[in-house]
Amino acid sequence: MDPELAVSLETLEKKGIMEFKDQINEISEIASKEKGFERLLMKMRSDWRTVKFELGEYRNTGVAILRQLDPILDQLDNDLTRVMSMSTSPFIKFLER
Image (cartoon, rainbow, N blue to C red):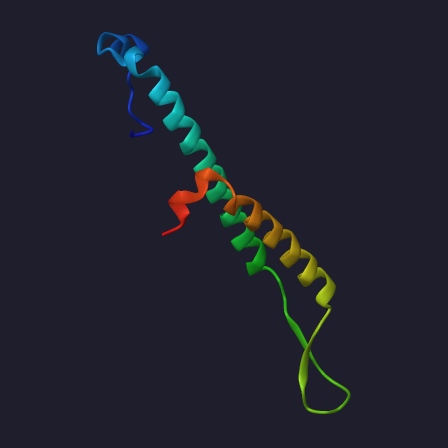
């Protein structure tokens, strides 16, 4: 439905919309949950864009290693927990493809 669509409740009632009240509530609930998942994924993606991966040489060996891993690992752990929690929801099917 177009969010800018201006339809009055009176018009909807005349069209018999109240007959579909339960289905509309169910669809609305599913859509709200899906939108919440999309927002959460967008936030996680946005958060990772600001993460700086610092490299440093390991004991003069010429081998580069990541420095300051704790904040990165904490964020990764939090995001993995969120994604795993989302994956158990029946409302995640829209993302499976």
